[in-house]
Length: 275
Image (cartoon, rainbow, N blue to C red):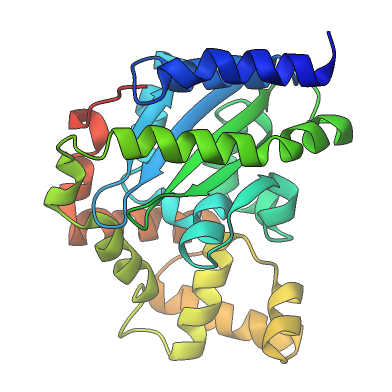
C-alpha cells in the first residue's frame, strides 16, 4: 500500500470519530501504523482551569499521572515549551530538555522510575487558549526513538494537530470541572515565588533553573557569570532553605506546593476521561 493510500484510509477512519468516544485511541492506533510506540498519554491544559488526563493506556500508571498533575508538571519540558514559550508542534524530549535534565530529581522520579527511556510528542494549541500534550514513549526493553521514526511523526504533525483541534472543539460544550479553579495559574505563581522571602532574586532564579534541570555551566553562560558564582548562589540558597542537595530541594518544593495549595491534591480524578 502506498503512503498516500495509507493516509487516505487513516483519515477516513478518523473523521467519523471526531468528538466521539474512542477518537484519541483511534488516533494513537493510526500513529502506531507508522512508528512503534510503547506507551501513550494525553494531558489537556485548559486556558483557565485544572489540567486533566484525557487519555491513558495503562491504568497501573494512573497514580503517577495524578500525582504529576498536583504540581510537578510545572517542571516538565513539554509544559514549559507550550505554557511559557508558546512553542507548538512535534518535539523529541532531547529538543526541549535542559542539558542537565537527566540528572534532575524530576527526571529521576517521573521518567526513570516510571520505566520510560525516551519520549516525544505533540503540543497542540486549542481554540480556548489552552493546549494538549500527546505524549508518545518508549519503555525499558525498547530502544529510543530512531531518527526515521521522529521524522515520520514530525511529518504527521499537521494531521494530528488538525484532528485534535476538531475533536476538542466538538467537546467544548461539555462542562469542564477544571474551570472551577484556575489551579494551574496559582501553581505557576507558587513556582515563581518559591523561596521568597528567604532568597535573593538571583538565588530564586538559580533555584528555579536547577529545579528544571539546568546545569551550573549552562546557567553561568546564560546569566553571564562564572560557574563559581552560580555554585555560591546555589550553596547560599540551599543553606537558607535547609536542604543539602537537589533531591531535598525538589521534595521541599513539592511540599511547599501542597501546603500553599492543598486543593491540588484533588487532582483530575474527578475529571471525565473521555477519549
